[in-house]
Length: 517
Image (tube, rainbow, N blue to C red):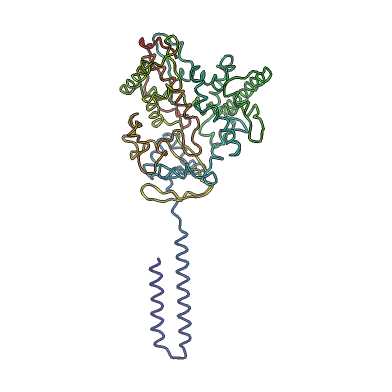
């Protein structure tokens, strides 16, 4: 464009000079004025052209074609969210937009497209307003129902309980599968849910729940999570039967924990659990937490921790039971640790925090499970300020202000330029020296996102690995297991847990059956 403008200006000047040579002298001033006007006009045209060129922004991301009214929702309901996102990624590339019910979501695939998503300041990309649909599950005044400063203070309450020094206390009190006999068949999904609720009720909810209200609280938690469906994202307060069960469950949980807290205060009894920590927490201005806030924070932590840890534990067991080489390696590691002399008084086997840290094979198996079966299908944010995203191939797109943006883990974890044979279950891809998730220039920690990244990374990652290692380690040491039911599909786009029953036959192992955790 600059070259064309210069050519235009040059042509006008040449023609003006020729014209001047052919006119009478009394028109000379007219000719000079004409040349001046043409010169100024061409400079104005050139200036405007340059400004227009400068103001041009990259185009918006390509948009998937959906149904006239429902957008991509009908396709999700018929084929599933994973299939829809993977298809659009295949067709449209690493940056694309899905639109439904008036809401547009731009998906960013690959580490090169994700840096701003995870590391931009809150003033540019925010989590506020994205997960408001969780407010009916946790109650008002906690989680995503409060401003970012209050939420950061509430997150601070969690940090002191979830750090490793605190977790060491809880390792020795976890209970395991003692009701199992010598052999039999169980629904492993139900059993792991049960044992994790036992762990959670002691470590987080308090011994009062475990000793007196375990079954009721378990049922209420199921009702809370069962009230979350696709429609809940758009209409969280719609009076559906599931939402009514959710609301009744939260009200009852608030009543239960309020009674427990009142009893503790009146008796002066202090317990070593998350419930007590939250009761004793104070905001920066000195204000104490309320009973409803404590209940909401407990529920949030429970759903974010227990439910997701349960799903990952089940998937990890499924992957081990369908891959004999990995199963044998994990069992051999457990046997080696036993022979290594980690024993307590009287020859009993002691599981402590340090021993869990040595379970490298099991750790890699769990991490590979999280890659193939991420806790969430995607991570969402909202833009406060538009930005330009650049793909690995050099393409550029403008993401506007106010747009929902998503990092789809179910695509990011299967990129073939990061992970060799990405659909293959291969825990050794995370072994030191190979570490595929760290390959590539500038990728850093954005290739493996099961616990998020940046300032919103999950603070419970260490606790999750610990719980899962404790349970799987116990199973591997004490039982020979065999999967009896087909390998399941995920339940839905929210929980990503295995669907249906997971039937497993077991036989108690003679070699390690006398060891105690």
